[in-house]
Amino acid sequence: MNTSSHRRSLNSTQRKNPSMCQHQPPCPTADSADREAARQVAHHPEQGWSLLCNGVLLFEDTGELLPDGQIIAPHRPLAASRVVKAA
Image (cartoon, rainbow, N blue to C red; front, side, top):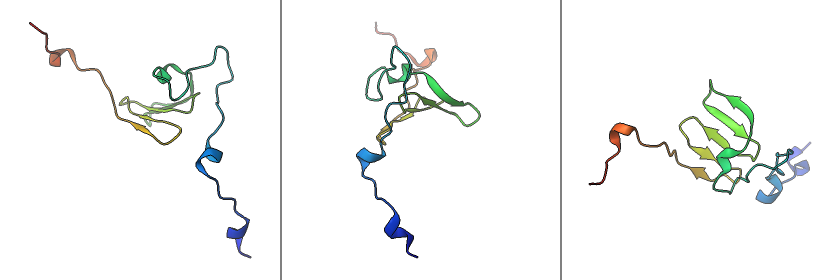
């Protein structure tokens, strides 16, 4: 039996999960500037990541993976010793 004929192909809009946020007030969406303020639904510090209720994977190095596959590079603040003060 050919199982490939029974498989559905999903386009990118069909793969997107509806918002996981079911509480009030709702958390910021994944495309909001304050997306990191969303509640954690899974936290795995031993693996270095957390899943937020808006679908964002937040990594301990401050990098992010958005639900649409977009990658946000780590954005750690500079250490105080590396901050240069203007004269």
